[in-house]
Picture 1 (cartoon, rainbow, N blue to C red):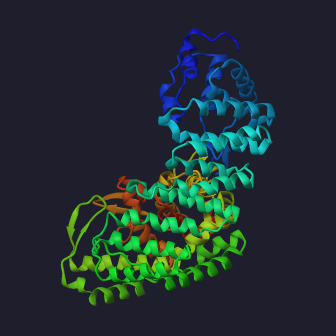
Picture 2: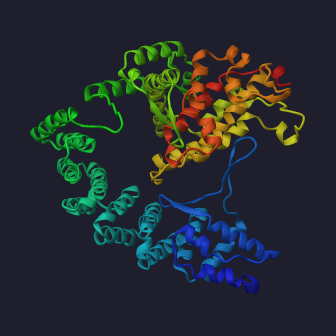
Picture 3: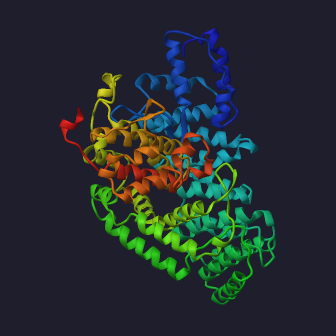
Length: 589
């Protein structure tokens, strides 16, 4: 490698002295560089590019993925000059973490096993020097070692030795994380896995009250291992039942709902363990506590028999739908009216419910999303009941089925970003190109609403697939997808009205303005093309007559936990319903 210029020596020294394995810490420790032109500017860019990869199930995956004006996914990967630079850096650096990263990237790009072996050796060396405060990185690095070894059949014994050593020597509370990495890219023999399985019950700390969640994680991971080895699960379920005693010891009052739910959970585990008599005893206690428990919140669940019946219905119905081609699945949820809640019927049911309810005799107070207090008027009580009734009806009648098909469709490969994109492009008006206004320019002439929706849809599927298919993200992050698709819904509806020959302008205080979302949903064109059921669904998702997502997102009222799969899937469902029409070419003007 050529002599490093003086203005870059601090930067390269900071890289060489990296001790942390955390991407956050690494980027904090990197020195800034002076502006430099020519060959070394390119080298700095390549260096920073190589640091912009994250380990995911043993693979180095770039963070840089974007959608272009046509909605196609573009990945910024390594080029020929990048590869040559990394080869030089691999020879120059003495930092094992950098060596492992450079060689891993080289192996991924050119598939030369020499780099696979270098990567494994340096990942092992990095594990040996890892700091205790960064122990969370151990399973991630182990996954890389196992993945490379499994793919190349190189250093198998080295990789196995590291995995077995870690799972034997690390503290019990951390062992499930290592075991998960082993199971993701398993190269161990059945005997070696059996040895781990035999020791797993001894990892449980039955007397330590703070070990409840750790014990549960160990045993749930153990169930995966035992299933793989086809071992009986009775012992593990019995240990899960005993683990619930740690909670019961801290919640002994009969009025405590935690005791009530824990007894029910324990009964479930005992039944799975084959301890039927003990399970029956716990179920009797569970039913007794139903009469004594006091809840801060009202919670209702279907009984075991009803839940089984409902799940059977979902499985049967979703199987029929998933047997269709992808276009048929998406068309079913785009145009089928029977699955939606009838707003008139829902209002009547809500009014009857509140009339017959004891709550009608008392004042009702609510807190909004920002914890602001409000006493409800009688009319507002009815509105609240209508929303609650819609939530239940929509969940039972439509959304449970849609979510089931959505999840199973992704897992089975029937639904993914590419297939959704193709459907929207060919079967909906989102693929229509049209002039939006006087400021239209060349790039906008080549875009359409699918261009605007593509980044959010891509991020939704990417996040879901990372957590479920790749099983790496412990917490889903649907913020980008949900924010983008929610705000785009209003603009898409506005343009739909314009494409249909409608008007979206209104006069307020003598000034011409665009209609707001609530007004767009009451627009004559909207009512002409969309049914009352569709419009009620849109109001439920985006306005005060339901979840009010448009307002809450626009004003950043939502907490992280509000950005969940159920919420973002509801938004996607509305996008699907909104796009169910197509236009002739003559309408594009």
